[in-house]
Amino acid sequence: MNDNWFFDDQLWQDFYDCMFSAEDFQRAAQQVDPLFAYIGCIPDRILDLGCGPGRHAIPLAQRGCRVTALDSSSYLLDKLRAEAARSSIKLNIQQSDMREYSKPGHFDLITSMWTSFGYFEDEQDNLALLEQCYKNLNQAGTLLIDTVGKEYLARNIQPVHARDYPDGRILIERPLLNDNMTRVSIEWLLIDGEQVKRTEFSHAIYSGVELADRLHDAGFSEVVLYGDWDAGDYDIEAERLIAIARK
Image (cartoon, rainbow, N blue to C red; front, side, top):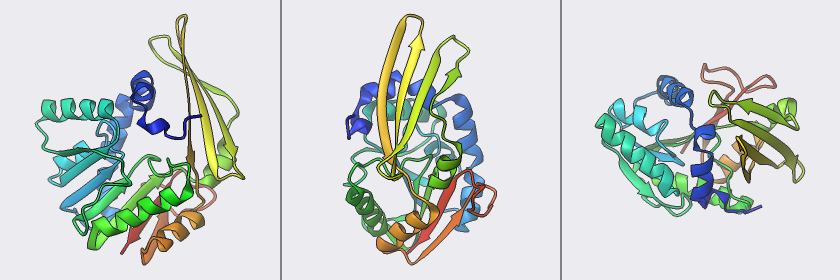
């Protein structure tokens, strides 16, 4: 498996429709108001890490926020540029490795949405990203991470499952918890008639306590966890792991 799979634009191109459905965009837009409620204000300057085609960046900008949308994929950023132009949305679009983007003290809010945190094989790189987020936030700034929790995966992971698409394609997904339940590796097979596309990727997974500990290690003084977008507690029934970290 390629440890740097997220730099592979062919993966994003081949599996774009599997990762970014119209329903996903609608759901992301519905999360903007709860997001503002979690941080207690409508922030001015936002950095959206791993923004992809702009599921969250676009509705955040539509609410009047000055959004820097950052991703390493030129393919996904081209999708974002096209949608921003179509909707007459102004964004600061940046192509960069998120570990290397530096604008100290600039942002009111940094977001990492829909399990875009934990991509790096070396756990020190994931910690370094949190440390860079800390530096890029102003003194009143907040980091919001929305990911899937280890507790949820341990309860619900299935060895193999399939998803049917209206156009006849079938996606077969084979996830596996490994490395002492610190990572999840996923194999996708997309069957389109007689053509089959295959990819593998992996990312780190965290329990609520583990993620909070890493945020504290990166310098954040206050970390609050939620289990959904309705301010539910992070507990054994939580469907998401949403961490709100303040300097």
